[in-house]
Length: 240
Image 1 (cartoon, rainbow, N blue to C red):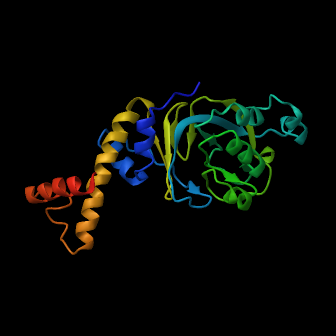
Image 2 (image 1 turned 180 degrees about the horizontal axis):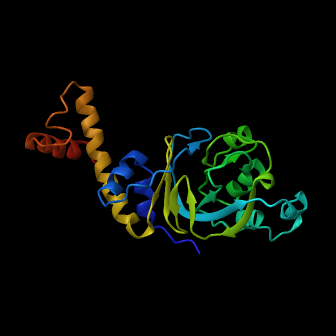
Image 3 (image 1 turned 45 degrees about the vertical axis):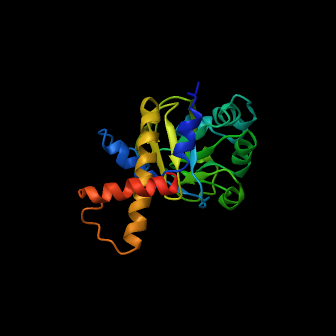
């Protein structure tokens, strides 16, 4: 099963960047949380947030991966698409190999219809122009036309995986923005969301001040108490 998220945690994570989240996680000693070589198929201008539901591929073996395997309704790839809960993020371990597609636009369209929050692979998608046209956020390494069967065999649903060289456990909170994707351990998601929300307010204040010509010295980080006083006044004025 995939863990539930508090609505207020989801709301806060929808308004923070992956960059800010990596800093909050770094403060807790977590350094390897941002998926490597995983990019949005097309920018959506909004965040993707949800608990991880995973699918793991292993290297394909020819005698087990003919096209006929898709006729089996229990085929792990097909079954995972139908089992991924609404609001979850479907995360695929494709062994960082985009030479064959992790999925195509029909499967991604089905995930969208089922209310899934997004899809992530460290491999590639086929039909990527079609996927780009959908509303569902999608992240991959690069486009890949060949069917997954020539390189990947779907083997396990909703177990621990590696994606983009990052460990992902079912229920971990996945956040994607127009830059990439970060993994938050489920047990600290609420506190990370709270901290990142506060950090974002301060960074918006700093960006406004720097845009008006102020030096970053004493402001970022705020070693000058007068800047903290100015921030408190800014928050009160802006309802932040």
